Image (cartoon, rainbow, N blue to C red; front, side, top):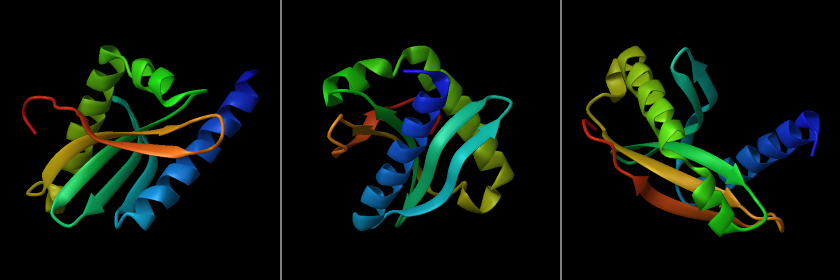
Length: 120
């Protein structure tokens, strides 16, 4: 796929993930949050839990799981730290890092707490 098509698919996957999480009781606080440290696809809240969500669209959910590499996890963690400094009212919430995969049929799969960095 070309980069334009890939970007379009990524945006569609993020919208679908946000909708899916909304159905599950999550409130989306930010989408495509970018800062000098990295990018977070979705920042959501559910009760006292702040969730940083990576969205991966792949042919299968398994391929999406493998696409989340440690280097990318570190960038997301750094971006999340920056976000918490910019949003001090959210700093007391429990934090979690989730993954939503979108397969070729458009079916979302939510994987809560997909990795757990230290210091959150």
